[in-house]
Length: 277
Image 1 (cartoon, rainbow, N blue to C red):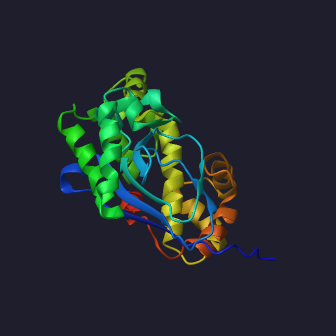
Image 2 (image 1 turned 45 degrees about the horizontal axis):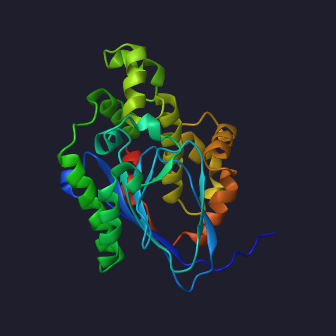
């Protein structure tokens, strides 16, 4: 028997970054819960990147690369804006190895001191959520303008994984003409995760991207699993339990009931839907 869900008026809108940030930022996003909505628990699966986020009225936060799901209790009237960095870009923005931030959620003032406090004071003056998101984007652009570029080895490896140029992580180091030990060290410093962990996260994100293009994806799990790169549906189910905390059928059913309207993930999902060359 289908379970009736309480009415939730919840939207997520993504857009591509400005051209100057296209090589460093995956997307700029806005998440809003209507004042007329019920409160609800929102679960975020890992996406492989570091994010600068702010629930308007609060201190901006830096969310390190996650290895498991995060549950958020969202109250009616909540607005959150964010900038999601490409996996290899975080160490340039933050000026420290991304591996030190894995599974951490820190106030911007903890890492940026006075600049974090200034950003908190500026955001309430934004006239809309779009303006607040643009302010976060400008903050990222200003910091990156004075930062060293991302590690080219990590950047190339991430590009291959995102575009499915190479799914064979074991041979990636040799194809980049670097030792396995150096590859892993440089990749973890830039991305915060091991190559295999990022591969698993991006494969699951690819599954979500594919599911977003289908009607009633909960009825097409075997096909979606194969297209995303899983060995079979059971493989997908095991990975979903680790990365989302539930079976894929359960969270896709919930998505079908709650998220078919007002959600636009095209900016982050687009690169994951490229065909293998």
